[in-house]
Amino acid sequence: MLISLCVIAKNEENYIGKLLNDILNQTYPHNQIEIILTDNCSSDNTKKKMLDFQAEPHDFYDIKVLDAPCGNQASSWNIAIENASGDVIIRLDAHARIPKDFTQNNAKNIENGDFVVGGSRPAITDELNRFGRMLLAAEESLFGSSIATFRRKTQTKTAVSSLFHAAYRREVFEKVGGFNESLGRTEDNEFHYRIRKAGYEIYLCPDIESHQYIRNTFFSMIKQKFGNGMWIGLTLGVCPKCLSYYHFAPFLLILALIIGVLSAAFGFLIPIFLLLFFYLAFDIINTLACFISQKPNILYFFLPFLFPILHLSYGIGTVIGLIKLPFFKKSLTGKEEQRIEEFKITMRKNNLQSI
Image (cartoon, rainbow, N blue to C red; front, side, top):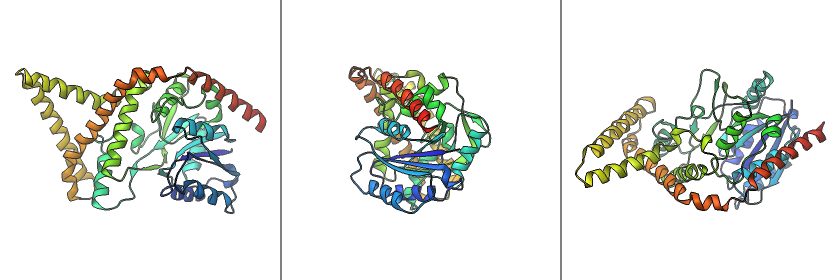
């Protein structure tokens, strides 16, 4: 069974080499692995590292290095997938690491009859100092990041709504199409919603695991949370059903704060006191959990201040996204669905040509 490992990258020169080395160490037969590396207009040495890897002696089925036309993640993924020849296509983020049995375990689950599989994706950091470990603790915490099942290790095979690094039978793309190129950061949520709507199950498997690097500076993490929140707001105008209630928790926090402050201005202090009391209780409990579950770090005392900053950044991002939503909807050309249908046709044609 031919497996296509698809990687897209933009300015990932500090990380792409590590991932390529992980791919080189995969235990799955290399002559059954095709590697699709897509550069999205990098201004650093990302593409050079891709080309150097391609030029090295190897025993892979093929290595392709492609250029994306300076678009978003969705358009880059579509370019990579359209050029994939594999029976199974795996999406891999360049800002990640995979163990040597990653491809093998994905293939095993697909061979057992599943159509879309993936595994847990715990966060990691390349900053091993105290500050880096504090940011990692915040990102790993349920309170600091998300309750998404794939973010943490699992012991049982579970049907889920979405995955981070997923393996798809080629048939899935032929039936469902590619990623919606009008979306940024939420393109996987919308894509997996269409997959479930088409009748496929998405499985989180305990024997599959990969890792993603967190943003290793305070401001880059804040910027990421703000951007994630903004795209949640914008995605409401395209696919509200592909979002979960937990995506709006920070936004609801912002609303509750506004209502609490307005109530206090009119002399009703109980709402703001209750909000602050319960939030502070969760804040302290989750900070204590980090102290208990992680290697001791004095900087964890800053977590009670970091958690609300992350939540407010995300929530304000969602507010901005909702404000921009009418203008965003006007910018949609209506060609997104046409592009998805064209993608299906392309994948079917490519499949016929490879037979």
